[in-house]
Length: 457
Ligand SMILES: Cc1ncc(COP(=O)(O)O)c(C=O)c1O
Image 1 (cartoon, rainbow, N blue to C red):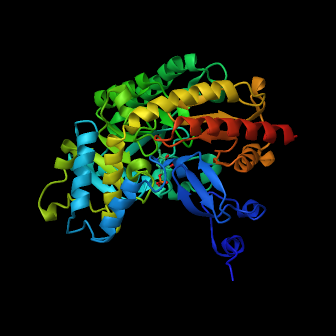
Image 2: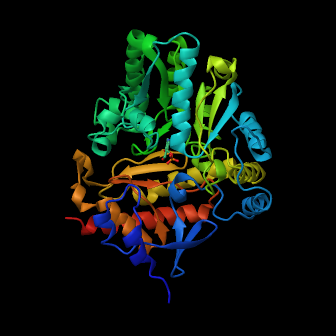
C-alpha cells in the first residue's frame, strides 16, 4: 500500500517556523526528487526553486560533480571527528576558505549551521578579550531586526519582539543599532528609496559612533549581516556603511563579526559581501551556500591575532572549549570542496552578476507596476518587496489575510516555490541559475501577487 505522506506528516512532524493549525489546512508539497533548479513532488510535479531551498543552493540540485565527490567520500569515510583527530577534507576545505576570504582571516573553526557558526564567533570574541586582560568587554552590538540564527546566543543578537516575546530570561541583552532602513527620516524603513539610503546610513553610523564613544570599554564585538539584512526583510546597506562600521570598530578597539551565512558565495554579486566594502572583519561566519546547498557544514573564520591568544599550556585553559559532534564532517567538507571547485570552473560569480541585472530588469517590468507592491529592494540575488493594501500610505494587509502566503500558494500553481517573510515577498534564486529561469521566476511571482491581491479584501 502506498504511504499517505500528507497524513503521516500531519501526525508526526513538527515543522520549523510553522503554525500547525494553518499547516493542517493545506495539502503540503511532499518533495521527493530534484533536477537542476527544480524540485519534484511525489506526484511528479516540477517546481522552480525560487528561494534556493532556503537561500542555500548555488549550482542547482544534484550537480554531477558535487554528487560524484560526495559519493567518493561516502566510499572512504563519512564521519570522523575533529576532536583529537583530523581529516583530509577538513584540512583542504579550511585551506581553500583561507585562500578565498580576505587575507587577515587565517583560521577556520567548523560547525554545522549558520547559528552555530555565529555561536562560535560569540564565544571566540568573548574569550579573546578575557585572554588579553580586557575582562570588562563582555557586551555585544547588533542591528535592530538582525537575524543570526536560533540558538540562544544568536537569538540574543537577533532578538525580535514578535518571535521571542517572553524569552528575555533566557537571553542576554545586546546593544541595538537601527540599521540604515530604520533611519530614514521620510517614510520609515519599508518605503525608503535607494537615493535616501546613503543619508540614512550616515544616521545609523552616527548612532554606532555615539554608542562606541561611551561604551566601547565594555563592548567585545559588533555583529552585522553585511550589505543586506536577510530575514529582516531584505534590507540593503550601501557598501560605504560597512566600511564606516569597520573604521569605527577599529578606532574603538571592538571586534567586527560579519555574518555572511546568507550573503556568501556570490549572492550579493561578489564572492563575499565584505569585498564590496573592501574591508576585512575580525571574524566571519559562513554556512548555507558553503556546500552548495547539499549537506550542513558551517565555518567561523578568525584572524591569526585572535587565534594566537588561545595558545598556552593546557592548564592556562585558553583553548576554545567549544564544538559540535558533526562539526567539519568529512562528507560535508568534500561537498563544500566540490562546490567551490564548480564555483570557480563554471564562473558562477559571473553568472550571478549577469542574472542579477536580468532580475533587476524583470522586476522593474513585471513587479514594480503592480498596484499593491511597495518599493523593490535588491542586493545581487537577494530580493524583497512588500505587498501592501495601500502602498502610498504604507497601509499593510491584516496579518490574518496572509496575503503573501496566498501569493506563495498561487506561485505553486504556476510551478514556482517561494517563501515570504511576513508580507514581504522574497526571491532568492541560485547564483548559477540560467537567465530564462530568472524570467520565469519573476513572471510567475507577478502573476501570483496579482491573484492574491485581487482576492484579498
Ligand atoms: C544571516 C544569517 N545568519 C545565520 C542564519 C542561521 O543559519 P542556520 O539556519 O543554518 O542556523 C541565517 C539563516 O537564515 C542567516 O540568514
